[in-house]
Image (cartoon, rainbow, N blue to C red; front, top):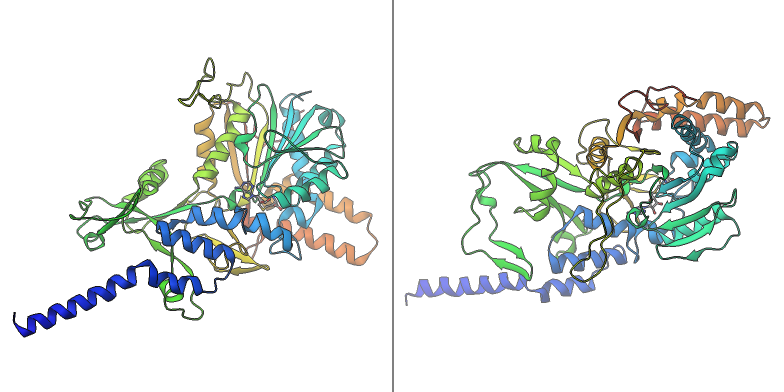
Length: 508
Ligand code: SAH
C-alpha cells in the first residue's frame, strides 16, 4: 500500500477512535458523574436525556413543577414560601381579600341567573395554592345562606401534598384529613360541607345533575406545553435530514436518509444538554438548552394538527406555536361537567381486555348548569410563542435553570381552551377573555374597596389597601389589570344571556 494512503488510513482510524470515544457513555459519564449539578433534579433530568435523548418541554415542565422528588410545587413549598411577599411570586388572591370576594359575587350572579339550584352545587378549584382564593370566597358565600346550603362538596385539585396540607389548615382548621379512594378528605370550617382533594381532575367522578362552579387561578400557566417550529420543505432542509433516529429500543442508524419532505413540516423544540456546560465544564454555561428536533416525532406529527389555527401557520416556515394538550384536557373536562358530554352515554361500562372496567363516559346532562372561571395571563386571541419563563424571588430567571427551584410557566392560550371546551360539549358557551381590570371594575371593586377604607383609621393600613386595589386593576406598564384575563364557560343559552363581567347584567 502506498505510504500516503496508509498514513491517511491511520489518521482516519485514529479520528474514528476519538470520535467514537466522545460518543461512548464512558467518557460522557465520567464528566457527568463528577459534575456538580445545580439541583438534584438537574442530575435526574440529565440522566434521562442521556439515556432517552432530548425530551419535550412538556416533560421537563412536568418534572420541574410536580415531580415528587424535588419538583417546585411539590417540594419547594416545604422549604420556602412559594407565593406571597416572602415567596417567589405574588398572585391576585394574595394581594387582597377583595379579589376572592368579587369572584364569589360573580358565582352568586351565575347561580341566580341559572334558577338558584337548591342542591347539588359543587365548588371545584384547580391549583388552589395557599387556599386563599377559596377561603375568601367561602367567607363571602356565608352571606348567601340559600347558596351555602345548596353546596354539596368542595373539591380541590392539587398535585402538591405540602400545599394540600396548607389548604387543609386554611379551609378546615382543626378538622383532620383522611385518605379516600380518590384522594383525601376533611370538613369545611365555615359550614357543613366535605372538602375533597384529588391530584388530577379526571379522578373526580362526573355525577349526574350536579351544578359545578369551577375556578382556575394561575393554574393553566403551570400546565406543560409543547413548542413547535415550521421548517421549510426540501431542498433547504435536506442537509438537516437525520442519519440516526430514535426507535423503541434506542438510536438506530439510517442506511438511507429519510425521504425529504416537499411541504413545510413541524419540528418540536426539545430540551437538550448543553455540551459547553456538561462536556467542557465551562463556567456560567446553562446545563440545559432548547434545540429544534432534527426529525419529526409523534408529537410534532399529531399535536399541531388538532386545530385549524395551527394548521394555517404550518405553511409559513419559521412560524412557532406553543400548545398545551393538558390545558385542553382540563378545559374539555370543565365543559363536560357544565354542559354534559357531546357523546351519548354507553349502555354499560365496557370491559377492557384485562377485564377492568373502563371509566364510563360522562353522562349527557339533562340541563346544563354551573360555570367555570379561568383566570390567568396570556394573549387575548393569538397563539403564545416563546413564552416559557422562569421566576425566582420575584425576578425573571432562565426557565431551564436550577430545575425544581424555579417556577416555570407559559402564557395561556385562551382561544385554544375555548376551542377545547366547545368541542367537548354542545351544552356550553364561552365568554371572554376580558382583562382583569375591566372584570374587577364591573364586579364593583371600587365600591367594595371604598367600603373597606371607610372603616380604616390607620394610615399604613389605608395605604396598603389602596395600593392593593391599584395593583389589581392597573393597566399601564405591564400592570396586572391588563396582563391577566378572565374567561368564562357557562351553560349554552343561545346567546340570550351574557355573564356579568362579560357584557351581561345581573338577572334575578
Ligand atoms: N391559585 C393559586 C396558586 C397558583 S400556583 C394562586 O393563584 O395563588 C399553581 C397551583 O397549581 C399550585 O397549587 C400547584 O401546586 C398546582 N399545580 C400545578 N401543576 C399542577 C398539576 N399538573 N396538577 C395539579 N395541580 C397543579
